[in-house]
Image 1 (cartoon, one colour):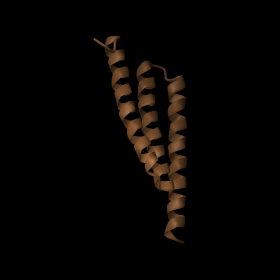
Image 2 (cartoon, helix red, strand yellow):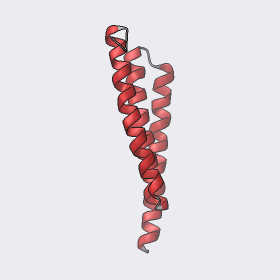
Image 3 (cartoon, helix red, strand yellow):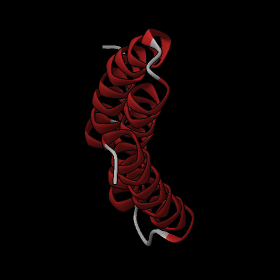
Length: 94
C-alpha cells in the first residue's frame, strides 16, 4: 500500500466523520430545546465547517482551502461572541 493511497483513504474517512458531525450539529440546531443549545450547535457547526475546509485542503493540496478555513474561523468566533452577548443582555451593541 502506497503513501498516496493511505492518505487518500484517511482523508475520505476524515471527511465522512466531519460530515456526520455536521449533520448531528444541524439536527441539534433544528430541534434544540433551548437557545443555548442552538448557539452551541451553531458554534460546533462552524468548527466542523472549518475542519471540512482543512481536510479538503490536505486532500487536494490547494492553498485556497486553508485561507477559507481561516476566514470561517474568524467569522465563526465573532458570531458566537455576538450571539452569546445577545442571549445574556438582549442586545449586541451597547
